Length: 117
Image (cartoon, rainbow, N blue to C red; front, top):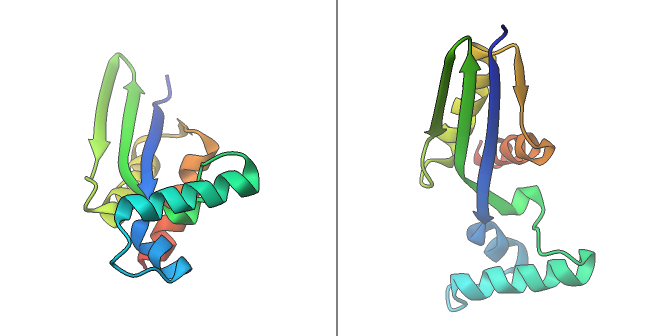
């Protein structure tokens, strides 16, 4: 049986990116910045799901089935977005011939890697 890797990501609003994009200063709280972004997004699309480039990856969790073995783990932590993202690509290329994740997970990881570069 070929190894199969399944992974998923969790994200939070990129407050720093939103501050830059909307020219907001530190007097506006992080919660207010996020709520403003959610309101603008709801007006535009009907959903408060922010575009990938305005989300920070805070967790990448993996499940790997390899023969009779099954492992579950997470990569990086919320303060090391770039390391977790590159670790995810390394894990996929090293351990599997087949992997699965929600389509937006790969797009989010790719965009965040570009922003961090």
